[in-house]
Image (cartoon, rainbow, N blue to C red; front, side, top):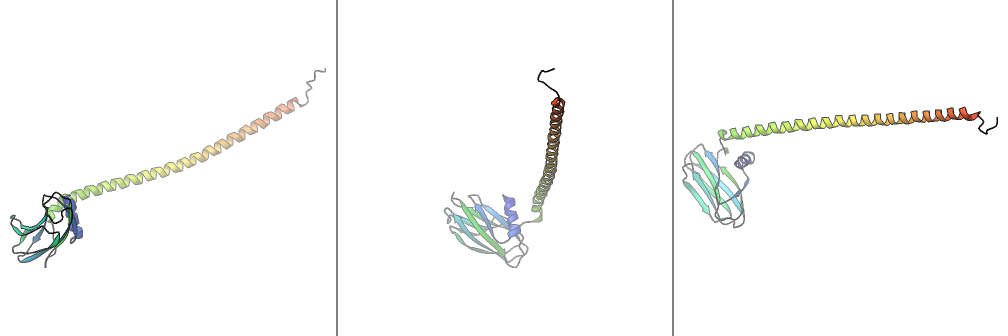
Length: 195
C-alpha cells in the first residue's frame, strides 16, 4: 500500500486521496534550505469526519503544528532547518475516512521521496514488466497456435468433403455399372421354363 502512495505522489504530485485510520498515515518532504514554507490543504470525508488530527513533524518527532477536529482546512508552517519533515493524518475515531490533500513547498521543487526508496519499487516494476512480457508472448503464441489450428481444421474439413464426394461418386458409378451388367446379362435370357 505504501508503494501505491509513493507512486501516486510521483505521478500526481499535488492532489492525493488516501484512506486513514487510527494509525497515522504519513508522507514526507525534504527541505534543502532553511526558512521554507510548506502548505497542506486538506478535506476529509467519511464517518465522524471532524474527528481527525493533522500534524507536521520534524525528523526528530517534534510536532511543529497540529490541527484537530476539523473536516477541511489548510496548514502552513515555516520549516526553519533543512531536513525531512512528515505530514501525518490520523483518525481519532474508528469510522471510515478518506482525506484528499495537496501540499506545496514555496520556492522548492517537490521531492517526495529519495532515490534510495525507488530501488525496491524499480525491482518490482522490472519484475512486473517481465511478467507482462511473458503474458504477452504467451498470448501471441496461443493466438498463432489457434490460427494455425483453424487453418488446419478448415483444410481438413475441405478434404473430408472432397473425400466423401469422391466416395459417393465411386459408389454411384459401381452401382450403375452393376445394374447395367445385371440388366444386360439377363436381358436375352428366357425364364419362362420353355425349352
